[in-house]
Each structure stands twice: as structure tokens, then as C-alpha cells.
Length: 211
Image 1 (cartoon, rainbow, N blue to C red):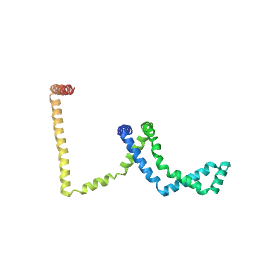
Image 2 (image 1 turned 45 degrees about the vertical axis):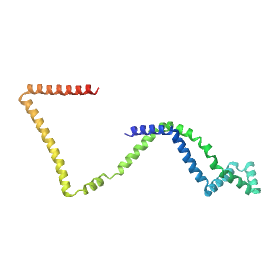
Image 3 (image 1 turned 60 degrees about the vertical axis):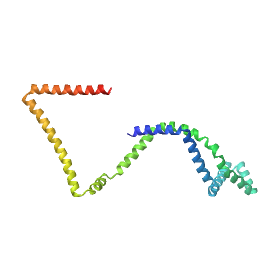
Image 4 (image 1 turned 120 degrees about the horizontal axis):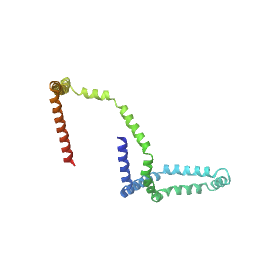
């Protein structure tokens, strides 16, 4: 069951990511959300601080690091202003950056195919974990508690009566066939042969009708 639904899901994913309207919508939603986040002052401050730390880490303790520290010492306000200005410009550059999303969507189906076995294994484990958490006894008990004694008695009686009728009729048929074999074995063989021929003939007729 899992492989069938996995193949169906992959087909749906291929169709969706190839849809131009879907790509436009996902770009628009991503751009809108990213712009809202990047325009927040606290986010811009964290990006600015992170950028400064990365610049120092990249410059190291050599000549580049010395030049950066000297520049900050002499022009700290200008240094931060330039970085903050670059951070504030990020929302305006999102559209060009999101053009690369097409390449990601193009590679998505192939990436899913490469990891199909892992996805199937994860899905199987998730289903098994879900089933193991089900308390079947409590579910059945809760269902039974919804019936009163009279309804339970009627339910059991109908179920038992149906099973007894089935056993009774099946036993009657088998008894008749067994008695016929004991009483007239040759005649019984002929009867069985005729019945088998009729069944095969009816099956062949139905098959021809369908084709």
C-alpha cells in the first residue's frame, strides 16, 4: 500500500511543481513573508551583528583582521551604518534571489526519486507507530458501552443466528452430496461432471460477454 501511495504522491508533486501558476504563487508568498520578516528591526539587528562577527572571523588575526579592527576603531559609526544599510536593502533584492527557486523546483522530483526508499521506510514506520498507539480494546469497549443490554442481546442473537443458518444450510448441502456419493457413486459422478460443465460454460459465457 505504501509504495502505491508513494508513487501517486510523487506524480502529484511532479504535476504541481511544473505548474507555472504554482511557481508564481510560491515565489509571491515566499517574497511576502521574507519581506515582512526582514523589515523587523530586531531581525535586522541580529543580521547586522551576525554579519560583523562573520567578517571578523573571515578576516582572522592577520593583516586583514588588523585592517578591519583599525577601520572600526576609527570609523565605527560609518562601519555599522554601511552594514545596516545593506541589511535594509535585502527585501528589495528578494525577487532576483527567488529566481533561483525555479532550479530548486526543477530538481525536486529527481531528488524525491533518489530518496524514494528512505521516504517509503519513514512512511511505513510512521504508519506502524500510529497503529501501535491505537488502543483497540478501549475503542471496542467504548463502542459496546454505547449499546444497552437489549441492543447487545439482539446484536449477538442476529450474528449467532446468521452463522447457525449458514452452518445448517452448508451441512445440508454437504450431507446430500455425501449421501448421493454413497448411494449412487456413478450417478453422483455424472451429476458432478454436469454441474462442473455448467459452471465452466457459464464462466466462459461471462468472459466472452465482457470482452
